[in-house]
Image (tube, rainbow, N blue to C red):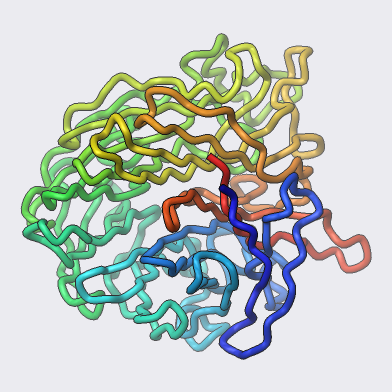
Length: 472
């Protein structure tokens, strides 16, 4: 059943305010859990994007970018925490990240959040960026309660990076229980591309020296999946010799060494007009099955039309579906299967996914929750596609009760939003590069960046973070 979210608590004060549902939603349960408070003239306001979630018990922690730049990064990373399974929320913003809030870096981006069960801490990992738009390392902030956050520590330092995956080993049966890991794309030498990994064994206080992946066929990491036996798998895109592979890199010794890159499947992705990439979302059940979802157009006619993203009014872009693949070991992967959200003849384009799993008695009885964004008018019906002036963006949800063997009817959670109401970046209008879906007290839960029209008087955006329980 869907959980009604009726209250939002501001910061750590005792003030509790009623939360009004977003007007563009088709549900009364969407609640705004944060809003950009900054006025930095170099960034774009009021904008919040890229919410990610983690759950421990009844505590939900969300992290997201606040005050997005057109180029890389944002003014800060925000957080919102519920201690009662989403009924009320505390919210705030990290300190010590950028120069705006007592840090040393111009910009911050790519927040990922995890819970370290062994050490009892929530962790937000993020990348700092310099004025040239180059990633310069990984920062990690810690909290024992999801409400009070430390100044971030430097987990890794480099001269050129982008993208990362972050996760903690929360299986008490794992020999590496309590290890937390981060892996990123490193291009600092200007020639090779690798996915180094760092690990912490003390709740994010200190971090190891980077361990390099053993080959240069890696690409941009999106997530880290950790099996109950302690095997970790870095998952990413744009790998392989031609840069067109979804790939996996495993470690069986707690991140001390990394195994060779394994290609999962070739990308077949038609870029839509807005900012979206063929990123991989992952989840692992209690039996060790790794689930991975990604956008792909291979089941559609006219899949992969070079340049269609950049000539949307004159070229046809095939809509992307969402595909599922699984693995028991991070090396051998099933053939990608299409998730039947829409008919093969539909004009709807799907992208930007978040995947969660609730383990059943075996993998055949796992419950999967999948959140995503989509454009319902990607194909205008005359051989052309929509563009930023007329594309309509919505947030969706679909679930499975049998480990992805069959799926329930898809639901529209919010939208449609005119794409022009979304914050602009160099890669297009933005809601996120990745999002999350989680289970809270046995029920699916999601968070989304949603936008109302730009204020005609101030010229400011109105894009903020909303959360909701989900029907499955």
